[in-house]
Image (cartoon, rainbow, N blue to C red; front, side):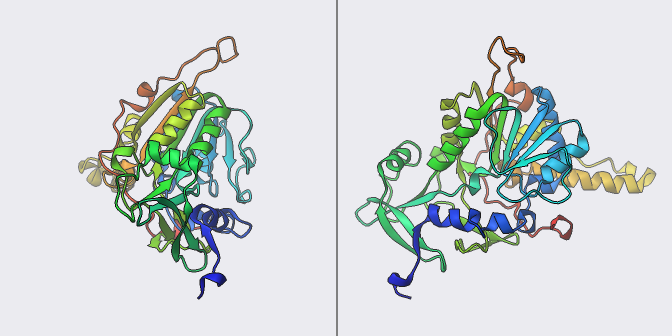
Length: 361
């Protein structure tokens, strides 16, 4: 096919249309049919978030990128008195409890606990690559085939972001980076709207001293990795530059920041993957099997090399003195333990294994 007949776009533009356009992947597909997040792995994840909400005094939980409402349903089952809000481009799911609010847009003002579980990685980004002269250029993609070519040089704002967060200057021709500025802007908007409470992002991520030289752009369909072709047939994702996102939140007004691993955070919140005592198998075999299943699910949530190595970015904002909420502070270390970041690049979403039949809506 000649270039004149191809639909060349930057990766950000092509992915935006493929995921969120009128017939986009997230508007027409149930995410649980294609991958499992921590929400799908174990009810212990929702229970831990409920404990976090209570620890920080939140009566409202906002789920950004709510999918088909799985987390909101689980939280409602645990505490029907919670005020629950789902933010998602897809239509309101059938059967969602009537008390749960649903919207495509964030409220202008938020109080409580805001959770963005594997949301940032699905915010489309442009890809930069060094050409033979070691000039960073935008990578363009043909939406129908996934073929790539180098396009225009990277613009000034994105060049500045690369210099600060993912320097390519010393790399060889062909070195690539995903330009995370749209994610920084999106997260800053979340934090800006938070009047008091806690904003929590959970994702597979990396930091400046461990950026992958070839980038992390991936495609997923039915729980399996596929070529990232922006033709609406698959999820297209890339790891999050979580340190850049954290700085953006601080500039947007966060009063306190904690970066840690999911393993450390969930352990602090009481998630325990320890197996039940073997003696229980004789005295209560049915209870033993149930406890063993729960322990296996909990262990998956905190497993090294898997979900346990996801990053948690927690950013708190304190209510201004003189308001009804007073100036109550959120002690992130008391809630989530001492910072214990993952020791290596967060894994590719290994949790995105073929979903079980029960998880497919």
